[in-house]
Length: 214
Image (cartoon, rainbow, N blue to C red):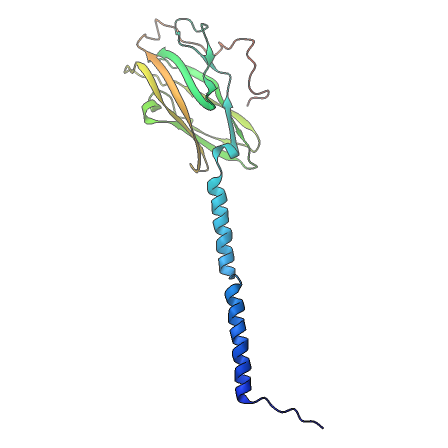
């Protein structure tokens, strides 16, 4: 019977060295599991950062009207919310500084996601004292819409003149936000002697932006 000779110790050492060498090369070229998860997390972060307010919500003009003639609420009315130069803007018109007019359906916001979303809004400091902000948060169901209303804050101190600023609308605790330019003109004429534009001054021919407003 033929006997199998055992490998020489030096030969075994040489073979073991070759195996270790190629194992090291393979491990160096293959990605580590830790690196894979890091790449996945980084990719998700990039996707979140590149999303925008417009990818998740639709903000469009409502049908609320105003004008610049407080003595005649029906004269030369125009929509408060309009898209000018491809940007949504709000012009609340002209009112006595102590007026408390409520503007219904100024904006319509739609939730384009499949989850409930909490919406928050506030005016910049220059406008914050002119509008009530007690109900500046609400929740929208998935794929539904809601109108946004605003009301003038009655104040005893005169702040007549043209006031410009920004309306900030945000979601996901401020992660997504949108800025809307705002202008309003206040006159020194008292509300008692000068009637304000009423909420029901929308002409019959105006077609609402939503068929089923909330």
